[in-house]
Image 1 (tube, helix red, strand yellow):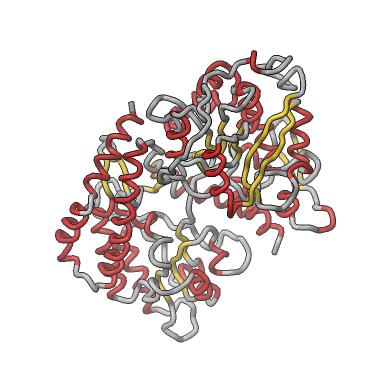
Image 2 (cartoon, rainbow, N blue to C red):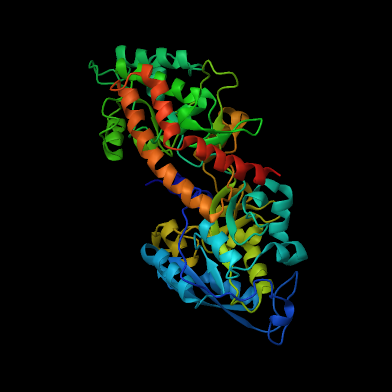
Length: 538
């Protein structure tokens, strides 16, 4: 693996995540019902809490932290956490569980009432936040944010009010904190062109769905890989899961389940006319063998094998060389979303600025919510975010210019893999941790390929980008109902999508299909999320 490839992978790990959480309700068998608002400076034994400067506390404070752990290193020996203890004066006792068993452990802790003082990287679902927040088990955080104990968070919330709204529950409280990414454009892999095929056909990037169809047809007929065989695959996929979001944007849809239009009206995507346009186009490609006929049967590895064999013209992946092989380069363009007959198309569902919800919470057992939120607030500022994402200064990196935040990588001792070493230094490795990411964190650390990606994004996606449907809260009863409805609807929609695309079900049966969706509760989904969206939008 080259230096450029390693650098791109490291930056990927620093700026992305997993997906947004919309999780179902969890039952509770009890919990600590202590007063959630009782935290104050007076609760800190023999010491006050500073609103700025370090250490945070006048006298040492010990807190119990519960988190999930990938098992790379002992948290007590992590240099980042040792630095935090020196800086803040707060000692953490770690109550970690392996990632695979953490959800079970978390449920047991809530049920028993034997609570940690803080949850870290806990993936608290919306249902857990509402349930345990209203029960008084989780402490409302907005009071401490607004009273000056979290200046970094307050600044982000003031500059990005939609982020604050997305983490305010229906009762007006914030019970958990997210991972915030202020620089990301993608939250899933985009589409890429095989640059060799474009060059061989002397073709410009298509700008409309009709031009895209024409280009894919040329790929099939004109042997752009030059091997004298008709083995080119114009467009490939794995069950359409990899291309669906990107292609829906060609018909003005920016979210694949539900979305709100410019007037604030919520729509259930699979019953919209734009979704029908998407199906119609893919069915056209299927009938003419422009869409890979192994789409619904192949694995991701099988798709990649076609790419490394130089057979694929258009495909999805995080980076193009993940599919085509070779090294990072600007030879394979990011696909420019194309325009359909729908007015206002194309659109692109961009990263919402929120990587993961429920990453940090304070419980009613905590002796000092003020100190705890000051501790985590450091991770939402440049210095703390840098420490937790890249490790201490002069270990894996150093400053070239501290004033401008420009950095450079240092050689890794013993020639070890940089990312693996990072995982022994910081807890922010393989788990959805609290904190923020921004372009300031990676100044000077980007390769030529990373800078090329920034240019492609700025040219092709940012001008048409639209934030996905916001993170909204339903009541526990509504969440339970929505989860059940969406599970059944999702199964049916996936089955019918494949049938419509492959022609097993004629698109002349569209009205029958929509009637079945409504019978299964699609309009109720719209009603539930319209209500939640209206509350969020107030």
